[in-house]
Length: 128
Image 1 (cartoon, rainbow, N blue to C red):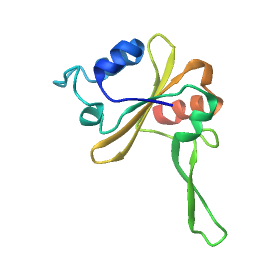
Image 2: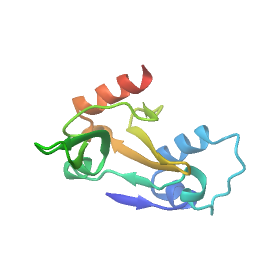
Image 3: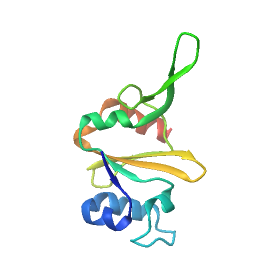
Image 4: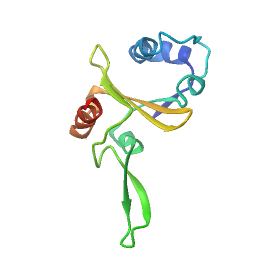
């Protein structure tokens, strides 16, 4: 998975994702050199292969027989509701935003060739 830290880096490498971000953030006073961490409270991660999807954790977890937390499930195992999940206007990516703190969270950009049924279900769950 590729980590993108600035809007300018996003605009050069992933113009579709950049336009989606700018559309969502048009009412803020952001500059191209701003760190995405300062803008959304995390970074943008672009999925490059199917294995990358396992890094997108959902809010559900797995516990052991005694009820102790073992790990969070991921999007390959279960669909879940996120803070935002939608297709880009051109249909090239699914964008999933997961807030994990008061500061915000990470945004995951998933190219359409890696979109699974769990991702589609997550969009439906998020949209309500």
